[in-house]
Image (cartoon, rainbow, N blue to C red; front, top):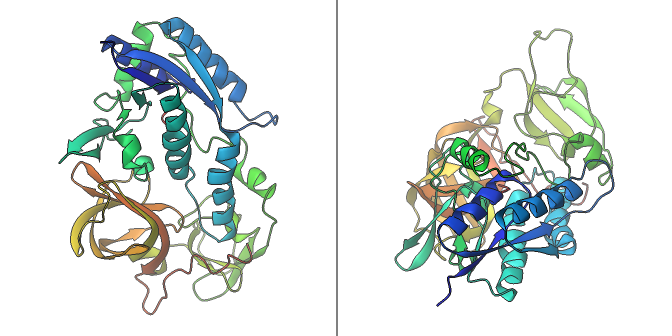
Length: 381
């Protein structure tokens, strides 16, 4: 009986290349599949270099490299949602829908048609059997753990997924790449959003969303500057505000602590821990649970609201089919609508959802209305 066939998503990066090598060492039959998810002749897209690196890795390892173009699926499932979220005043994280719809749906289905028994990627995560169902567990390298981005992956895909790097650290992966002479062993890790590349973010977003200038105001409602549009800014942001030398104000940085959607204003303060910027509770929708059903509420959980954040204690107060409510054990700064609230029980990722509202420490403050302007406005490489 022949060994199982595993098709690895070869992006051109070192992580997926080492994953393929480790699977070969473990005795699997291995083939690669390079995905093209974005095409642009703008000087920033790395598509050509990525494909060349993937081909060089496949040749070095002696494996077949397949190619697939998922640009249509990416634009429909990921990019369209990305723009819609910004129009609604939220700050999206496209890596989550990319993993759900592209890497573990379109790619997974393509690999299965090629005869794959399983797929593999260069994500830092682990799959564990939990009472006969696939469970998603954090990677050994907590600094690289990517379960935050993987929390919405369908269980049917997780059941046939291998994460060869789950028990390795990034330095160990680099050492393996150098030791076996991978042609991309020194290639830099990709950062940021793949379709934006190294270009200035605001420049890219302005191509798709019109500017809607308004005022920066302090917590007393005093105008302290002008902004270019709510969608260019995010909660907790300090840099790039262009506010300085305000008469009667201290010579200190300003931080975004709120958005007034009705009046197109950004609320700022010079105290990064101002009560209006500190979240005590939040609401999330677009729920997905790794085990197929929600944890019973009320329940104590660990919560991440951004990648690489140390999990914080929280209480899952209520959960339904459409949304959940969480109360934080300690106020948390810069909780951002559009990002994801991902729940954990120890090393196990339970699932999560998109943050759509938050309640702050400020007395009488209303939850952020993350959808109020809808009519106006984990890469594994």
